[in-house]
Image (cartoon, rainbow, N blue to C red):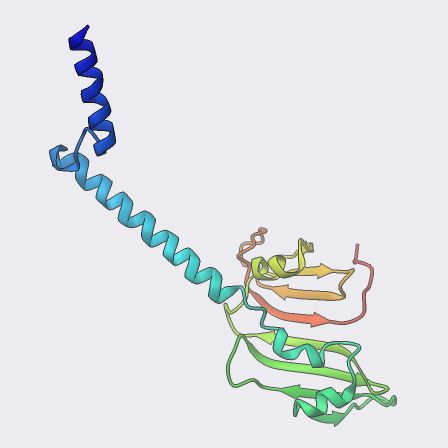
Length: 187
């Protein structure tokens, strides 16, 4: 009985001190994969955190004043270059080429003192469909041979991208994004 009690006390003492199998006593062929796995896991976690922090910022936030239904005064305040449209109506076509960011060109059409449509031309590989889906949800998708059209009808947003393989992927790069009035999806 005394031996059992002494053994139980030894187990309790060892478990309170920590592991009964110290890392130093493990063979190298076990320690090396453990070490590499730990380093790789830590690197992946840090990389994911950094990517998520930089990519989660909405690039459209800086252009909220030139989105549809905004006053044309806001467009002028943002210093977009505006010219009268060639049509017979009273509309204007305004452009802006940002110096940095994901967009190479921002265009807005003004009608009756209000923005009616806004287009964003995207730098190559700056945004993918997955980025847009994170902000606006799952789109209606139409795939063609090497292009794709994505629509969020209830939001009045559409985007065009390069589906080079002709297959769907959230990694499809987007080259143009348009904001306008809500419409019914094309069939």
